[in-house]
Length: 253
Image (cartoon, rainbow, N blue to C red):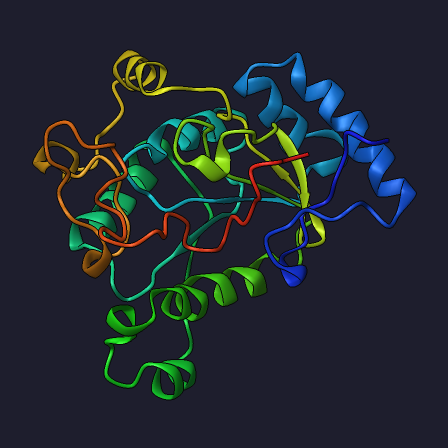
């Protein structure tokens, strides 16, 4: 099936053809089902039926996270939510995580961090972000998330096509690093996110009104100026716009 490729994190950024014909066929089936569903329907596909009890949500508890988490909570509030506490986050993000957990009734929020040994070995001074941002993201985000995802057959992300050039051709379902990856908000834009937030009276991340429309770790996030792209404050001054936990190639699947 020529329209299906598998994204393999271990082989770099380029998507690779599925070696397993069963995975390829299954992915095609899931894509066909997802293409005609809205965000809630895609989440039902990821959280019920064959994937019930086998799926985790990856959430940054950032500026747009409340939308996805509300949709998930409406289906199953006890879905595991994997949150990367890098040790470099804004205090506002940690407090926002606690507030959303309470307001939405999220029953299984799991905070992931690099081990003390890893920090002592790879970033003893805590300044790796200023020397090698990719390496910092790898040991503070990619490695802890990879470990946490091992028991799961699928993951859910809050990625949208409009966010970065790498995500522009993203599909609602992918096969990534050994599991299915669902992107229920893949076609949503900022207007839809704002309308949903208002309609459901969702709490907003406190830094958004302070000029941070996209929020990551504190050392690598700045305020966005008028006229700039909404993600211009992430890794400003570099060509980096992905931390590495959601590798894709733009070609998608």
